[in-house]
Amino acid sequence: EAGVVQSPRYKIIEKKQPVAFWCNPISGHNTLYWYLQNLGQGPELLIRYENEEAVDDSQLPKDRFSAERLKGVDSTLKIQPAELGDSAVYLCASSLTGAVADTQYFGPGTRLTVL
Amino acid sequence: KQEVTQIPAALSVPEGENLVLNCSFTDSAIYNLQWFRQDPGKGLTSLLLIQSSQREQTSGRLNASLDKSSGRSTLYIAASQPGDSATYLCAVLNYGGSQGNLIFGKGTKLSVKP
Image: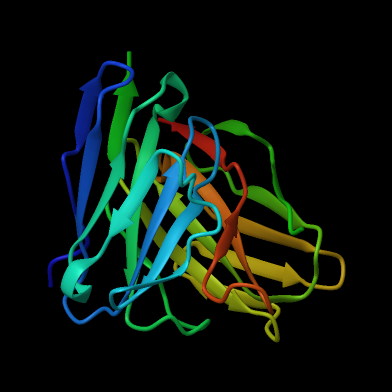
């Protein structure tokens, strides 16, 4: 069974440029998560989707970050414009449902470098 | 607000040693606690999950304990191997608030030398 797929794996951009990350969750998983992991830190949740609905986006900086999950499958996370402090790893995870007991499965992440 | 702390931040041991990684959390109202492994350039892999009603979980050479009342968990690795070298993250899931939101520590970077 394929795991969570993310692309690109690495991205280098100049500040003020836009950037987008893509995530394909495990087939059949209704819940999708985007996490931000700064260097030397643990992941922090940005947004959580139940199917196509964003049910928790309280930690998403909405002035420059946006996300969508059309048709409740793939998801895209966008930053526009990117700032130097956005350099980090962006992790996507999925679970079968959003139930507390469900295991989250993580993708390999996208490492963003903003110059 | 839940805070998760992991000690030490980094650990280097010779192959074959038994070792303990520590995790503490400030709010004992947790649903469960998980230990993850993260290899460079890769995502997180769940190693062990302990429900709040449990005291420990074992998988192979790994044993995780949970003392919810004191807000502590330990991950014990027996007979360490170079392949165990990775960053180990502890995460808790709280009751209430946003379901499914894991709160992570900063991790312990383990290096096992041949």
